[in-house]
Image (cartoon, rainbow, N blue to C red; front, side):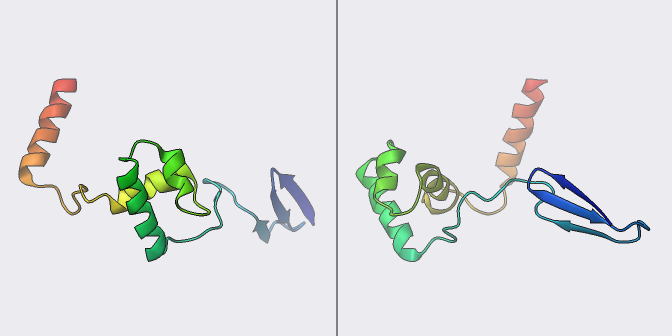
Length: 106
């Protein structure tokens, strides 16, 4: 049995090459936070902090949400909580405008 170690990953190959076992991550980003999902309480704290600081100082906003970074808070706000987000399929008008934008680029 041969063992190959690369960056925090270990691959074991049997001598007859019939079995391969892999431990650890092979590709993709590593998870930086073990905090997990957001609670309703955290969402409420974030919403209040964004209003207080007008969504301008994410370091200060993050100080209002324990155990969350400025990047986590910014991402949560921009992708999930912001009431100005338009969720759902694009309208025909928006698709048409996007095509015009792309056509003007080329």
